[in-house]
Length: 256
Image 1 (spheres, one colour):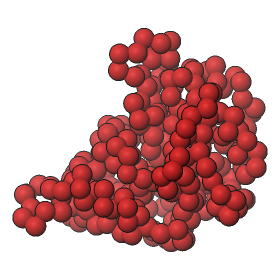
Image 2 (spheres, one colour; image 1 turned 60 degrees about the vertical axis):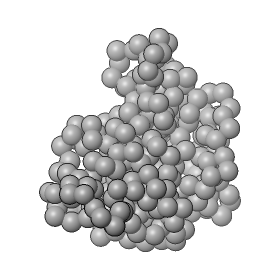
Image 3 (cartoon, one colour; image 1 turned 180 degrees about the vertical axis):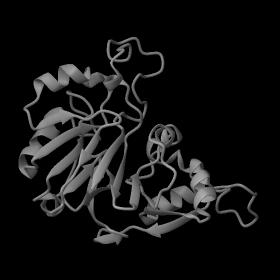
């Protein structure tokens, strides 16, 4: 299994419009953070988790010309606003795109992308096949997936475990029974918004505490704001088995 980190930024991305801080002015490519998303590949199966406003740019950068499914963690703009660009995959694959999300998220999609679900559809619109996502294991072709229920302050969201890899973004609460689903993983990608506390996202110390409890072989941070600092500075502060992820990072996962 191969995981590509498509983006590691927050809802505003990094650099932030109009910001003159050292991180936003950095010329280091690892400080350029598109909106958070990943791509998971196993054999001929390819899945993307979250499609924010940078989805088109991410797909072009990685020369992606086929996609089996999209998983959505939740309905916030930085996780769904790239959905209009699935039109290219509809045309290439001659089929609607399978989009896995829970019922509440489906209702948001029907409102936000109302033209997609209108009775009288215009030509050339995205074609979406919404598949109800519940908190139970499922499979897409060769990839086993376990949803992990999280809380983004008060909003229920999903993280996902793919065999021995797990991806948890946009949350600050996880119950013990959900935490238990993560034991035994090899690699974890987890959000760490900034060093100071935040009302709806894990900060650095909170993420480090969870990593210690889950005990993966390797952990990476994502959903990084400009407030957490430069990549190289954060990397120097962390133990060897924990690193800030960066856009374009590719991770090989051995599932057996």
